[in-house]
Image (cartoon, rainbow, N blue to C red):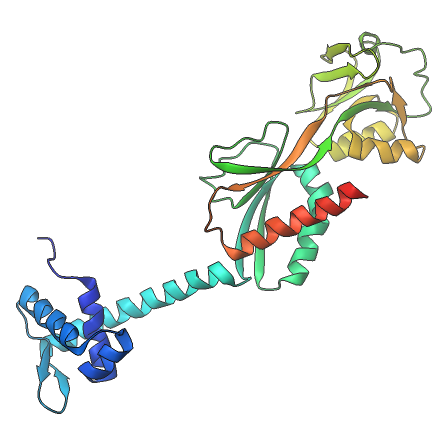
Length: 300
């Protein structure tokens, strides 16, 4: 049978017992004394029980009232604790933030940001999920997701952080000057990375597009960019590599650019978060911290 009384009335009842009088409870609840008395009478009527003994000087519990008070006092104390914790989430820099990011790009661009952020906010914890798979962010309870290329998630805000592209490169000891078109890559030893095939290329001068599917002379196939980079640096083969990894190595002479007029279309590295006004304060802090960092980097 459904209860026909209000939990609010039970809370008022516990407040009266805790403070020892109707008057003090009415002041604490910002409620008139007559309204509070009426609500308690209605509660007792609906329960068909007497919870309080009233006289001119004090309020005491009946035996049944003691049972109700002990049971509901604990409930409302727990509710008050939960409400306090939730209130702190709104305006206090504390608590856990769950984050999803692609493995190498996440490590390359985000590690220093996260470490600096944690130093600044010692009561915030980060739970990082590095994966190249598109995980179910709702099921995993993710607060912020970082993604490459096609990042859309229904009802999530997308903030573009950086544009990247992929270039062809190899070891300087090898002779690549004879390669004048991507179709000539077929007989070259290659290092490929899962997620970076096919090699989608566009000539920046002629706008010609060419999609190369490595299928021959693949010396090494990996699912992790760091290993791909190490293999190319060792001279194992040529590869199609993100520019943020390749260009510093090319500038330092550790790698050489192959077909410099050809590269992939630019692709965004983006941050995504739920489209809600009531985002916890800690999450908003990390969002703003990340945006400020990339704004400075991109303007350098």
